[in-house]
Amino acid sequence: MFIVFIGPPGAGKGTQAERLAAHLEIAHLSTGEVLRQAIERGTSLGKQAEAIIGRGELVPDSVVNAIVAERIDQADCQRGCLFDGYPRTTAQAESLDEFMNERGTPLSLALEIRVSEEELKRRLLSRGRSDDTPETIEHRLQVYESQTAPIVEYYNTACLLVSIDGNGTPDEVFGRVKDCVDQRRK
Ligand code: B4P
Image (cartoon, rainbow, N blue to C red; front, side, top):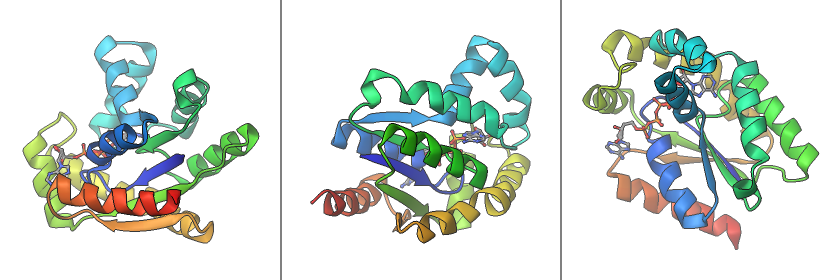
């Protein structure tokens, strides 16, 4: 299965994608994680991404599309992949559709995780990553509404969207994610 996880910062995309990838025995691709590793290693990609992520903005579409195009060709993605935090714009969603259609492996599902804004802020502030300051969190939430939220409608129109309540403990949320995915696999 090829599945997309959508949700605002702190919704638990990373947390749930890791568990679901293990459950389905498929690859897990977090574009945020790839970018953070590049920053840690000081590569040219990392240098380009560091200031953008620090401001709470999105890295250019061409950069993340190239990361995904390279990763999806690796052997462990043959059986499927969970895209965590990608796509984040309509242009990225269109590009992903193109890759997947060319490969003959269209997406099976787009899972939207919904969490109240108050809870998102609480989670991110307690995580305390360098891009989790109150000002950056506020800006990332605005960027989500203006640039990422439109892809929810994009996947709804494609009949791929399922929305899940992301409030509750990670185990409770995973129970909902798993039920929804297992139903689709039947
Ligand atoms: P990401 O790495 O995708 O990070 P995120 O949206 O902040 O977090 P996520 O929703 O995965 O939250 P998590 O499970 O970790 O992106 C970081 C940045 O990279 C972006 O702002 C952007 O600049 C750049 N980027 C990435 N992809 C891009 C793209 N495609 N295009 C352009 N730019 C891109 O959970 C958050 C916290 O909550 C954790 O501490 C977790 O332990 C906790 N938590 C999770 N579930 C919980 C629950 N149920 N209850 C309590 N706590 C919970």
